Image (cartoon, rainbow, N blue to C red; front, side, top):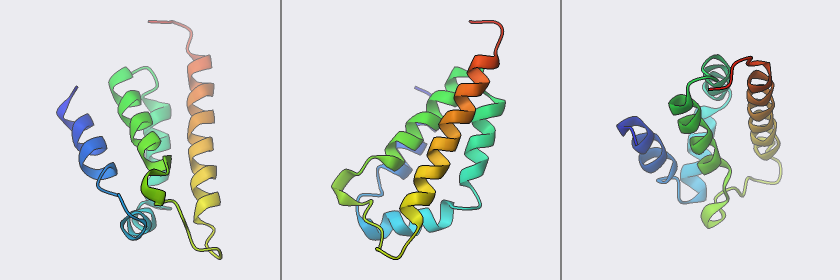
Length: 103
C-alpha cells in the first residue's frame, strides 16, 4: 500500500471512533470537501490507486463502528451522508461504464 492510503484510512477514518469526533469531522467535511472526493473519483476513474483509496475511505466513513453514526433526530446529516455517498458511487459507476478500454 502507498503511504497516503494508510494515512487516510488508518489515521483519519479509524480515529473517528466515537459520536462526537465523527460529528465534528462530518461538519468539517460536508459540504465543502465531500464533493471534492466525488470529483476526484470521476476524473481519476482509470487510476486504481486513487479510486481504491477514495472508495476505502468512504467505506470507513459510512460504516457504523461503535455506533458513531447516531446523528441527532433533528439533524439531516444522515440523509446528507447517504445522498453524497450514493451520488459518488453512481457517478463513479457511470464513469466506469463510459470507459472504452478495459485495463
